[in-house]
Every structure is written in structure tokens, then in C-alpha cells.
Amino acid sequence: MQAITVHDRDAGAGGLALTELPHPHAAENDVVVRVHAAGFTRGELDWPGTWTDRAGRDRTPSVPGHELSGVVVELGYGTTGLTVGQRVFGMADWTRNGSLAEYTAVEARNLAPLPADVDHTVAAALPISGLTAWQGLFEHGRLAAGQTVVIHGAAGSVGSVAVQLAREAGARVIATGRSADRETGLALGADVFLDLESERLEDAGQADVVFDVIGGEVLDRSAALVCAGGTLVTIAAPPEVRPVDGRAVFFVVEPDRAGLTALVQRVRDGRLKPAVGEVRPLAEAPAAFAPGGGRRGRTIIRVVPDGPAAEGSR
Ligand SMILES: NC(=O)c1ccc[n+]([C@@H]2O[C@H](COP(=O)([O-])OP(=O)(O)OC[C@H]3O[C@@H](n4cnc5c(N)ncnc54)[C@H](OP(=O)(O)O)[C@@H]3O)[C@@H](O)[C@H]2O)c1
Image 1 (tube, rainbow, N blue to C red):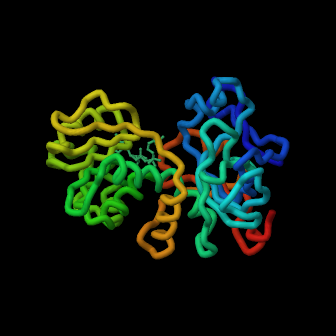
Image 2 (image 1 turned 30 degrees about the vertical axis):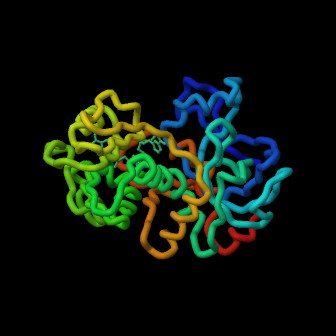
Image 3 (image 1 turned 120 degrees about the horizontal axis):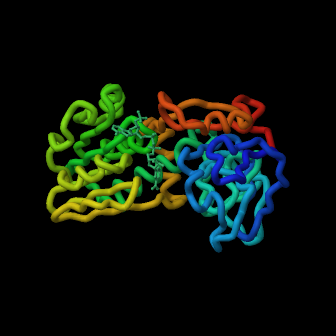
């Protein structure tokens, strides 16, 4: 099968190449998925799990990409809940070969059934952004109706989903981002937009939850916005400045079948729209990975081209 692989830690995105790899094996509790669409995170080439397995052993050449949408083609021993031919979407393991490939082996519990009326491109943009926003707001931040939340980077992949979910949950949403993101932030449902390039973050006022995706100085200054008993949640890095009378949480998103099911239901009934950016074929994944400005939304790699023939493709 064809896959995008990396083997040289120092090469950055320039080390990504389209390669021929053996078909993956479905281990116990795994399924093999024919990948139709896949997402990736540009920073993942810096993550230890890209290079080593759980025991710290070199696992190169490795396949990047940790979110996918596709069709189950094989079940491993003991796998329950999914069937061959079923449409699925979800997250690939951090320390195994990922989704930038024609086929990938994934633990079945990391996937959820994908309804027939949701396109693979949209579904591939949902797992990491959607679960991160959900877990950050409601599990770690304990956000409730009537509370105020500040959501940084609201025009980005995670932030845009967070704004929509927080709004739906009945929170007052203060979105932040660059000057050019104001219209997007407000269109997503934010009550207020704070432009971090020309306005003072401190003018956002006090919030029950601050959800940070940016880190650095923005994260440091966010601690002061958290009201007594509130929570600073970040996905960027462990916070160095903590709220005086509140919690500070850094977390890494976890796979969650029930969460995926709740998210995709929102997509189906129009309550949630993940931010899909460029859509490119597998051979162009190395170019799509390269750093560069001006990209909006999640870049999706369409491994099987869209269209009526796609669903029949195994
Ligand atoms: N811990 C976890 O589980 C987890 C999960 C998902 C993602 N992440 C990480 O979280 C970060 C965000 O992910 P994402 O997918 O949402 O990224 P993204 O789509 O690039 O969104 C980030 C948003 O924040 C904006 N932004 C960045 N720096 C800013 C600044 N100084 N002032 C104003 N706006 C700023 C960006 O604008 P521009 O595009 O104009 O820069 C963009 O709109 C990434 O580093 C990602 O690796 C962590």
C-alpha cells in the first residue's frame, strides 16, 4: 500500500515521502481501516511518539496522521462493536503508524460509526478538534450554562469548534484571535471578539473558564482572567502562571467513542461545523505538512477521491 513515511528526525517536513509499505496487520482488538480522508498536526514531527513505540524503541519509518475517516476492511481477534464494510471515523494511536496511508490498523474503541450522510472529509476534521474542544470545555473546564468562557484562537481548528460547543451549552463566549479573525469568531456564535493584536487581553474581564490553544505569553496572562473557583485549561503546554484562586489544567486529547458520536450528531443536525481547510491528495501530503502562513482550518488529505465511486472502494 502507499503511505507517507518519515525516518529522519532532523529532516522536518522535508523528510516526508510517499512510500510503498506492507499492508497493516490487525492485532487483537484492532480493525484495519481503508482510509478515505485523514488529518494531521504540523507539530507532530516533534512528538516522541512519532519516532518511538510505547517502550521507547525506534519505530521508523513511521506513518504520521492521527485522525481518519474510512471503511473497516478487517477485524482483529476479539474486536467487537464494528463490522467489515462499516463507515467509521476517529483517532489513531500516538505511538503506532497513523492515517496518512491507504490502510491503517487502529484500536476499534478509538473509532465511532460514521453515519452515511456525513462526508469523509468533514468526519476526518472532527476527531482531534472536536474531542479536544469537548474535553477541554466540559470535562476539564466543567463549563456550565450561564457561565462565561474565554476561548483563544477562535478561528482555528480547535477554537472554532469550542466556540460553537460553548455557545450551544448556554455559556457567554468571549472569543480571541487575530484582527482578521473577528468576523469568523462572531459568525461562529461568540458574544464578544477580542483582537489580541490590538486590544488588551485583560479587557476581556473575568471568566469561569479560559480555554487556551496558543500558549506562551497569552497563556501566562490568561491566569489573571480566571475568577475564584474557575479553571484555566490549555492544550499548549503546562501553565507556568496559575490562577490565584482557581485550577490550571494542561491535557492531551483522548480517544472517546461516545464523544465522537455526540459530535457527529451535532454535525448532522447543523449545530456544529468543523473548520475544513485545504483538501489535497495523499501524494501532496508532504507539501501540505510544510509550515506556511495563511492556511485556515484543518488541512485534510483525501486518500480516496470524493465521489460516488469512493464508497465502494475497499
Ligand atoms: N494537547 C492536545 O491534546 C492538543 C490537541 C489539539 C491541538 N493541540 C495543539 O493546540 C494548538 C492549536 O491547535 P489548532 O489545531 O486549533 O491550531 P490552529 O488551527 O492553527 O488554530 C490556532 C489559532 O490561534 C491563532 N493564533 C495563534 N497565535 C496567536 C496569537 N499570538 N495571537 C492571536 N491569535 C493567534 C491562529 O491564528 P494564525 O493561524 O493566523 O496563526 C489560529 O487561528 C496547536 O499547537 C496544536 O498542536 C493540542
